[in-house]
Image (cartoon, rainbow, N blue to C red):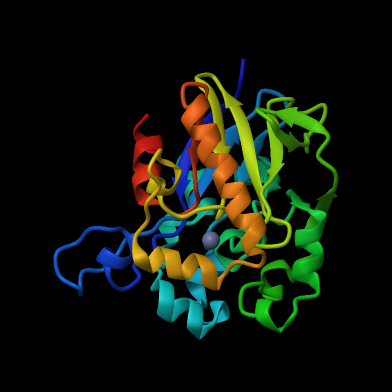
Length: 276
Ligand SMILES: [Zn+2]
């Protein structure tokens, strides 16, 4: 039957140069647009589930906690009304009904909303949890301990024995929803995962940061040069990233009638999903 899903943009970012990032724009000075694509899932049995949380209310209040490099590169809009907590409330829900948060990974632009839902169980893959709790020097700027200083109720997942369209997945919410899978997609970070959700109109696969531009999934893949550079700069495992991206591209080419794929930051995919 499937669950009801809302697509929320929980953080607009406006990095310099739409040409390099979005592949469009007139001059070199036009700002790009990126989103933080978050899912709000209404379950019949157990309240609300978020997939990723975007930029949180504390980040909006005190942007400096996200660090200067992030602010300088992504130039986030920092609007309170875009935060997940504001949008959940605006949809008429009690914020306390958000019981579970599934995170594609723990980068600061995905985990920022965690403190806004302190009672939710927070689901991540084990290698991601370990990488974020003991970051090496390369990862210090991406994982922010301040975003989990409230000691979330972590649920750490391992394995992936369940088959989902040829991918190995796992069900993080047994007994609550059989229609949700974590689909490990390592590469961008050590424990990065996709999240598959069966809705009333077919499957969604939130691919997190496994790719950044819709053209990467096309029969003749293409992407703007700024994205290509950025993607390599922030990857932790190039071979795994490229391998998983190719699997996603094949999935999209073969099963686009059954599965709609999207990544976290592409505004074209977000607008398409939010309209549908
Ligand atoms: Zn991201």
